[in-house]
Length: 294
Image (cartoon, rainbow, N blue to C red; front, side, top):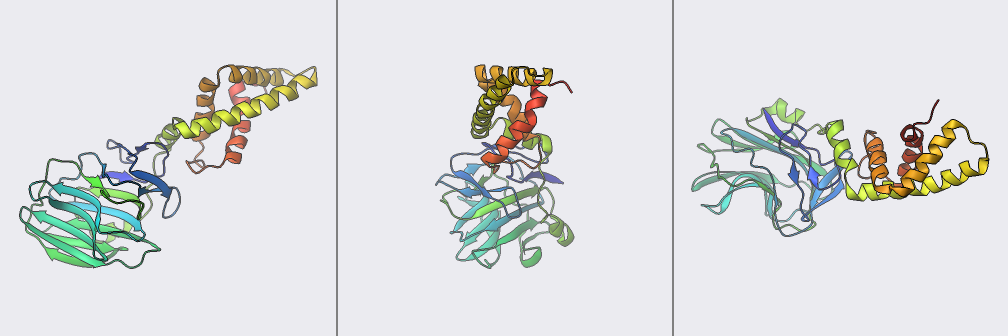
């Protein structure tokens, strides 16, 4: 079963779990960057690891992620064993190799392969099941090593890219409680689709997005009010739009939230939306929020 899936396509300070139940807060040590197909991805921006929810400490397991860049030695995602002070499970980079490490107490093994290049996106998957740690690179089994289970299940939650600064991009993280086979690994390479409601809700409360929507709303409101006022004898529909302009200028915060939700529910809009698109979307939503009669 898939325990969690993160597309990183949303905006704001929360990474949304498309499976549900394991959202987590992004710290200042994670920056949003363009994704491997569309939408967003994450990049390290500080020296402190980003904590994830306590998830994935199962008997069998799989972790998958798209990765790009010239990545330094360190963990892309790690379930840390504080007793051994080493990774119990996760995706590691070491001496130009991408590594899946599994640990059972003092015994650890590494399935590894040479990192292909520093310019393209590559899909990395690690599985443990049947006493074997496997590394799949771009959907192909690249290495496997034997390990008598179970993998150490430390009580601390996993973390992402601790100690890295502005290196590598990471997208579409999936975590499973079983060891996926070849065909399932290939299927897991598909982009993760966040639910429309989760994405819209996150975008509509994002402070940066709200500020831009509010500015566009106020700008259009002033221009709209001037145009309507100059007509002399406005229709009922124009009167409703004039009243919206007046009310929006009096209470820009409340009305900006209404416009932000209306814009955020458009599935073509994400955190990368430009100002001109926001202005157009504000104009499109204006009659609806104004309650203009047909």
